[in-house]
View 1 (cartoon, rainbow, N blue to C red):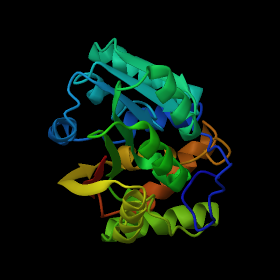
View 2 (cartoon, one colour):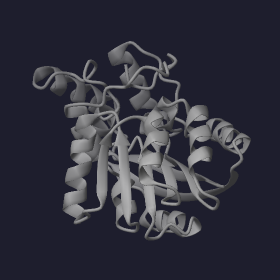
View 3 (tube, rainbow, N blue to C red):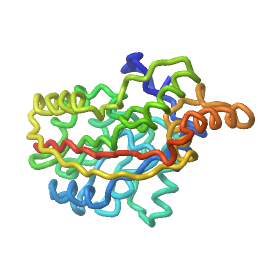
Length: 273
């Protein structure tokens, strides 16, 4: 199960973001603010250098980075996610994105392949909550040069875990449909971010924080798409009547509450060597 429930994620379990889930992810997940990407690259003096984006998904961060850097190596364990990342890079006209089918444990090998002094920035976004972050931070500390940066980006609290009436109604509808309890916030809560910061500092990083606030109004279709982007293929309702029924169930729960405000705060923990 890849949907964030109260069940712990096993560190050796590779979440399945394949098939239609990758398509929903590519279409409905929010991009990172362009000015925040500018600030991140400038803070690491990484313009024209090489970055590794771990758990890149469909390229929401990898592609903007590639427009600013010499090369971005985009790691993800899902071939379908990487396929959409390639398409996104093609649409953006960036030819310097290198998708690699691998998870976070490949970081040391990739860094060795790059050669000394090449790597300047390592980024990891929403997928951090699915990784062994302590191992990742230790590996990053070993492979980054002095002045290099490790950035952990939390791209807003999931729409079903926010504090609005619409969010509470949506959460209840999801829990009712699947018979689960939703408690996890995908490493976006202040407590989770504080824990990540401490783990970075334990590995010798000097950590500063960046943030951007924004609010967008979501249609019923966009809410449905975001929910589907967090479901594994085994949970995603089948195309046809099942999926129509699920969409209708969510829309009924949001009756009178549309459009749904998505109160997004993108937070960045930037650790410098």
